[in-house]
Length: 285
Image (tube, rainbow, N blue to C red; front, side, top):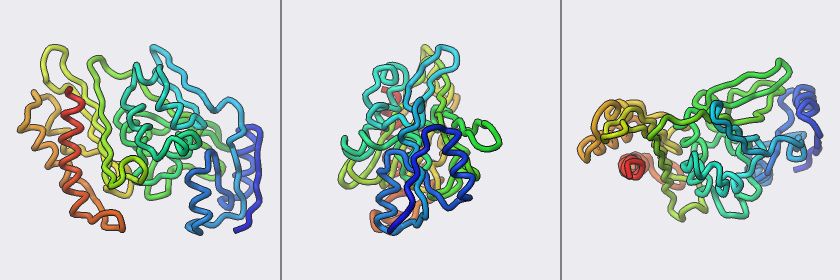
């Protein structure tokens, strides 16, 4: 398929191009998703706007009050290997390490991974669990959207005409907060997740009482989703094996999986329970 290739040098230029072509241009960063979709004729685009050369969008910054800021062009491999993130948000590193091969992680960007809006996106569940937000810029200025509200369907986000995701912001976690991300795939990290589960757990300092918890499921609904009934089972209670089983069953019931070439809906639902239980246990450990 032939298309016009455009390479803006600034965010403003990229916004201008996207606005001018009114939905008939696709944004490319690392290209690990878009180029495959174009090659497989899954999508058609008359123009491709490559933002990969725009300076200043590849960074990881941490502030004791504001928390973590990640530029949209930061590669998944950079997230995986960042000592700053490993020290303060290790679950982000764990999730990043589950995306494809090292070669793919060296090219794929966090902004591209999220904007591709695949229900199976490895990085979304952990970031949603950490209450991440998205900084978006466009013709109308700047806005911030909770990542939990960023996805509206498979391959679809809240981005409007001419808008770009430029930064992901993660607040400072509460003390005694731990996280876990587990991915289930037949061939491990190389393929898309059949089921992904992130748990972000905050405990009371001297007991195993759950002050707060987020359970976020991937690949088992049209968008990454909070398992709120599972969270309610655990919140405010001392976690034991029986409660973990109850929460896992609640998450399994909440999931909305489909049957496709990789797994049946019934299998996915069963694995949601298995991996939710494991993720809670890992966060506790």
